[in-house]
Image (tube, rainbow, N blue to C red; front, side, top):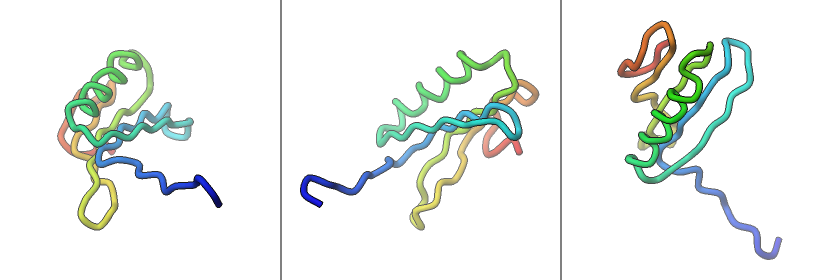
Length: 82
C-alpha cells in the first residue's frame, strides 16, 4: 500500500486501566522523561478514582515490563500493583 508505514509504539508505555474490568487507554513515548510526566499526569487526573496507572519499558524481547505503577490503595510502587 503506497504511503503506509509500520507504527513504532515507542520504548515507554503508560496505561490507565479504569477498574478491574474497565476500559483502558495507552500512550507510547520514546523519551523516558516525557513518559514519566505522562504517568504522573494520569495519576493526578484519575487519582481519586478506581484507576490503575502503569509505566512500562520495552525489554530486549519486545515485551513491555512494568517499572512502576499507581493505585489509590497502594500509591506509587516499583513494579506492578497487581
